[in-house]
Length: 356
Image 1 (cartoon, helix red, strand yellow):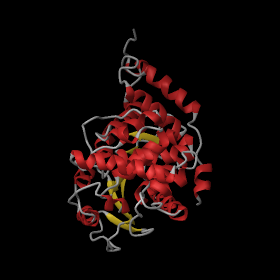
Image 2 (spheres, rainbow, N blue to C red):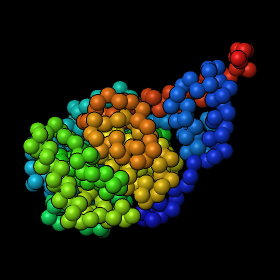
Image 3 (tube, rainbow, N blue to C red):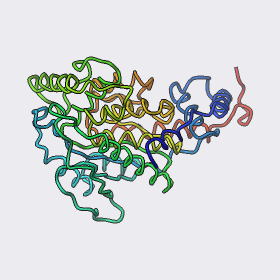
Image 4 (cartoon, one colour):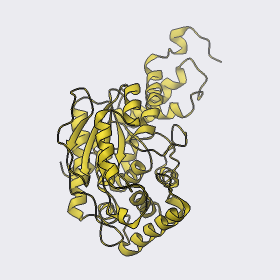
C-alpha cells in the first residue's frame, strides 16, 4: 500500500460509539468522572473501534525500529555508533529493559533493522523470542548538517516499511501496537523534527538524550539549528521534513503510526522519538491522532512540546528517557484497565446500587 493510500484509509473517530461509551460510563457503579482521564480514553478507544465497548487492547505488540545517524559525526553523543547494533543483539537475546517489561506485560517484541550501519543477522534465534525483520533502507542516514539525511525516496521507503509492519501485526491479530526505537544519536533528529512541526526554538526541544554534559548539550542545540538553517524544512511537507532532518527509525515509526490508524488499531506512543514521528504522521493525516495514546511524559523536553501540539495527555510520568518502548509498556496496563471498566463494571441498575 502506498503512503497516500494509507493516509486515505484513515477516518475520524466514530461519534456514535463515543456517545455510547460516555453514556455507559455514566451508568457504571462509580461517581461520574471518578476515573478521570481513563474515562475519556475509553471513549476515544470506542470511537476508534466503532463500537462500545471497544475490544480489549490485546494481544500487545511492541516494535523497536533501529537505525543509525550521520549526525553522530558532529559529536552529539559520547556513545559510539556501534552500540546501536550491539543493543539490537541485546534485544534479540532478550536482555534489554524492553524485553523485561514486555515479558511482564505479556507483549511480543519485534525488532526492525531499518537503517543500522552494521550488518545484522537476518534471523533471530529462538522461536518464542524477539524476531528481527531485515528492512534496511540504507546503513544509517547522512549527516543532516552537511546534506539531507535521506533522499525523499528513502524516506518514503522507510515510511512504507513502518506501514507494512503495522499491517502485518494487525493481520496477525494484535489488539494494540506499541512504538519502540533504537539509534545512537536519534534524539538530535527528533529535536529537529519537533522544532519543524511545532515551530518551537531548538533550545526548547533539544534534551540531553543519553545524558550528555553541558558542552555537548550546547553543541547539540547548535547542530539542530544548523540543520534547520541549511534545509528550512516545511511542516506542510512532512515527507520532506523526514528526509532532510529525520532518521530512518523516525520515518518508519511515522508509517507504523499511520498503518495502525488506518487499521483502527490503537498505537501506544513511547518517548521523544515516537512523538516526533507522531507529529509527522499527524501532519500527513490529522485524523491519525485519534489512534494515538501518549504512554508517558518523557524527560526529554521535546516530548512535552510535541504532546501539547498533538493535544495528547500522557498516562504516566516517571522521568523516563530510555526509549526502546519501555514507557509505552509500563502504560499498557492503564490502557487495558480503561477498556476493561466498560466490559466488566456493573451498572447501577444491574447491581441494585442506588444512585445519588
